[in-house]
Structures are given as C-alpha cells and as structure tokens.
Length: 346
Image (cartoon, rainbow, N blue to C red; front, side, top):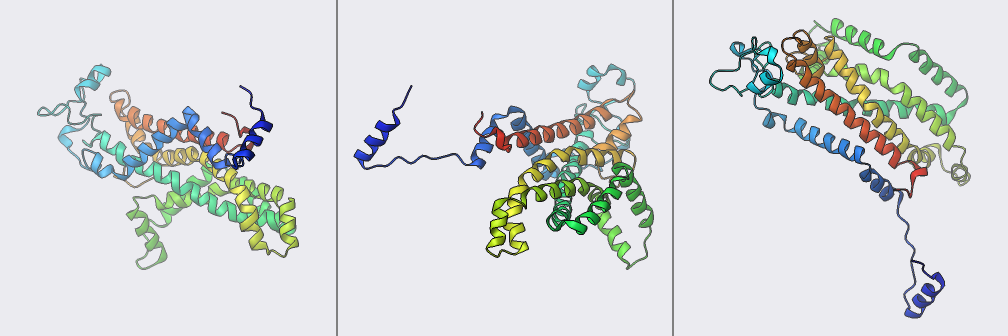
C-alpha cells in the first residue's frame, strides 16, 4: 500500500487539521524491544517471582528455616524415593505424614524447601546491594578521574591498577577472613563490637557486603572514566562551558544522563557474579552465619552426603542456577534494548 504524502498534506490543510508526525521515544522503543525478547521477558518474570518469594518467605515457607526435628533427619518423601531409589534404605519420611517435607529434610531434620525459600533472601539481597555499592563508588571515582584528567586521572587510575593486581575472589576471601577473625571477640563498647553486632543482626551478611563492595567497583570506575572521557569533549558540553556552566552542573546535567544507561546495563550483567561470589563464600564457610540459610551453604552441606541424599544438593544448586540464568537473560535483553543501533528494529 502506497500513500501520496502530497495529497495527504493537501487534504489535511483543506480540512484545517495539520498532520503531526510523532516519533517513538527511546524509552518506549527500548521497552518494546525488551518485552519482545522472550529470554529477557522470562528472566524478568522469574526475578519478580523470586523477589515476591523473598519478601513473603515467612508466609510461603511451610516451616521455620531453623526448626529441627532430629528424629526426622534426612527424611525423604515417597516421590523422591521413586526418583532416587538409593535413598530408600537411608532416609525415612515421618510415619504420620510421609509428605511432610516436600523436598526432604537435612541432616538435623530441617525442611529443605523452607531453607531454600529463606535462602533466596541472601542471594537476592546481594543482587541489590552489590550493584549499588559498585555503582556508587565506581561512578564517583571514575567520574572524578575522567572529568579532571591529567595528574589526577593518572594517580587515580594507578591506584585501580594496583587493586587489579590482586585476584578479586582471593582478595575477598582474605578480607572476609580478616573481618571474621579480628571481630570475633571485640571489646564491648568499641566500634568493632558495634560492627559485630550489626553483622550478627544481618545473619552474617554485613561483612559480605563490605568484602564485595571493596572489590567490585574497579571495573565500574574504569568504565565510568572511559564514558566521561568520550562525552566531555562533545559539542554540547563545550556549549555548556561557553555559557558559564560550572563543573557540577556540567557533570550532573549533561554528562551523567548520557552515561548512566550503559553503566546500569553493565552492572546488571555483573549481578550473577555477585551471587556466585556469595554462594562460593558460603560454600567454604565464610558466608552467612549458621543457621541462616544460604544456597551456597546448603550445597556445601549436601555435598557431604550427595551419594546417599542427592536432593540436599540438587535443589539448592538448581535454584542458584535458575537465578543466575534469569539475571543473565535480563541483562542481555537490557543491553540489546538500550543499544542505539538497535532502535527501530523488532
């Protein structure tokens, strides 16, 4: 079908109603492409469901995560016995209610399903706190370095290079070991005692936040510096300087809005790495404090009996994998949706 634009304009003028050509905004176009990306859409739905489970864990979980029933340790429901026949000789479900533990019980009789539900809190909180710390520190540090340039940039980037010389995971392990050993028995009334009390109230997550925060911002700082260096020489920034705009106004009104999108997308893609770091720290015993459940700690406990009770390892590992895949799919979808070269494509 072809449209004669000249006739359309003529008819519009004769009718007294001028034609207005509307263009789709970048945000609407990006959202449209995001929801058409099936993998990203599925990942987003899974993430929303996981956060709903995290928020209402105490109402969804059938038992408290720390409730122990020693007489029902390693209990296995009948349906799992059919899937893993080798468990029949070991784990016996409660006689009065064989399906009491839908996914079985662990070595002290705690419900695995309930601990998986409560364990989502640790991983999903890390998925929020880790990127926030990285964005705040990395953007501030990288913006100062890239904006002022010269000697300031050189010194600040050399500091980042020195920090990059240490493997981030090893550095995090050393920090966690230092915090746990130094603040294990702090003197009452000291700052260390206050930190230790706060860490205990958070189930051992405070030092995880600190450890991840001190090692996660270097990449964000470098990326921010590169973005600022590429934007600050643009014509609109020079025009802002010409009319007398100060450094603060130029940074927050002109440069930051043009670089924040790629930075957020990059940090979204880094979320699975934060979740994996927390799971690994919990797996080796440097994560949350028992009995606070963590998928990494549950995998560690289940790995000791994986040949007789594989359910104790498989289900928390499956939840960890699903969560990381969901964030990966969503991050990839956001990257494609916000790519200017993809605008206008379906």
